[in-house]
Amino acid sequence: MAALQVEGLARHFGERTVLRDVSLSLADGHTLVVFGPNGAGKTTLLRVLASLLRPHAGSVRVLGSSLPRDAWAVRGRVGLLGHEPLLYRELTARENLRFHARLHGIGDERVSELLESVAMHARANEPLRTLSRGMVQRVAIARAVLHEPELLLLDEPNSNLDPAAVELVAPLIGAASQRTRVICSHDPTGGLAQADLVLGLRAGRPALLRAAAEVDAEEIAELYR
Amino acid sequence: MSGVQAPQQERETVGPAQPVGLWRTVGALLRKELLVELRTLESVPGMSLFALSTFVVFHFALNRGSVEGDLGAGILWVTLLFAAILGINRLFVADADQGGFDAFLLAPVNRTAMLVAKALTLLGFLLVLELVAVPAFAVLLLGPPLGPALPGLLETLALGDLGVAVIGTLVAAMAVQTRARDLLGPLLALPLLVPIVIGGARASSPLLVQAHRAAPAARWLLTLGLYDLVFGLIAYALFDFLLED
Picture 1 (cartoon, one colour):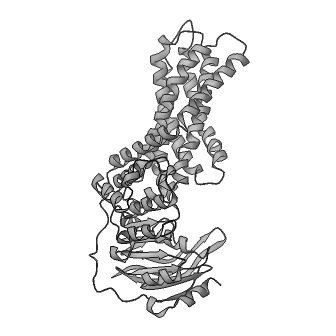
Picture 2 (cartoon, chains in turn blue, red):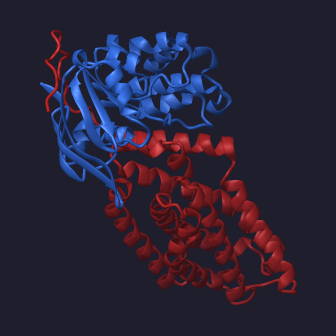
Picture 3 (cartoon, each protein chain N blue to C red):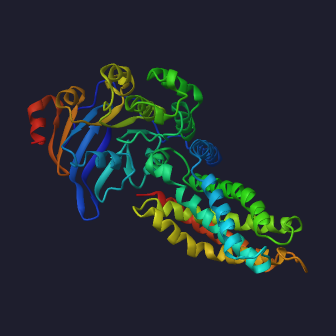
């Protein structure tokens, strides 16, 4: 079964077309890595797939539900890790995760478990504004997987993370998580290593869409030239 | 264009997430609002200080020892209105700036919970404001004693606060999505809140007199109640759309 089925997707912001003619299909449990220079439409694509933005043309099916009509059926099954951590700066890591856990009907045990997983238990009771960006990113990753989502939408998930932290969060958001994943990346080698399917965007249009095994890093680098 | 083959080990397909109950969601949101306000002290102290400063300004600007009746009621309600605007302007700022809206929209929750929680939060802010502002008004400006007027005044303030909380939440949710939110919030809120100020001042006026004190006029209380009800229904009908893209 396809976890994602997109046909002729277009999205505008006012007069500006940010995405157009995007079509793809991603099998359940597979990873799509999206490459493209800044402003290519990667983040917009993630937000459409998360049901936060409406498609202006084309059809989008996520986890079997058509968006935006059946967006309610997708909520709670998608984990989004964007540029913003979606966390309140004045609350502690534990308070933030507890808040999200309550929105998803999850108990506090899962919060403690995840704080351990991202090695934030020692700083869990400090306001987020006092933590480093890497630590905030670890809490944001815990927030994104808190409700065991079937689909992970990850926008440069390793940004601000040191190599040890990247290893630390791999079981949660890496291939080992066995979740269907859409990852936006600027790292051709690292991104390709994770991908089953590669989408290259340039000015909102697909410039590359192939199985990862058929793509080399040089083709991806070409997108940025 | 097509994707690649499905993996050998397929994950079990799961249905829609179990929705979380309205009041559980409201509880989670209220707890978060309380924590954020206690940590930042961005709304209630500002609202209270604004009201106190305004009473001091009126005290000296009017150049009279005390006020009562229509003038007293007008000063009280207009001051509370402008203080409320400060709280309304801040109501959704943390959610909009720190991604709270997105997190809420991604959760399997009833979106009306956000309306209820924010209106209750604003109502709480207004109650604390009035705990400070009404005694200060009595000390700095009011001629007649406050005690005998208090039951009727509380009744009137409660009806007024309910309307301000609902309209304020609706307007704040609209304004926060725009770039000019600091300007748009008050511009949208003031015309909608004027009937509450008129109703509240008219209902309170007979309470704030030395002689021939009377109960608040029932028709003004009824007007306030109906206004609250109408805007409660409008907010309930519109709020989902305000959160949508």
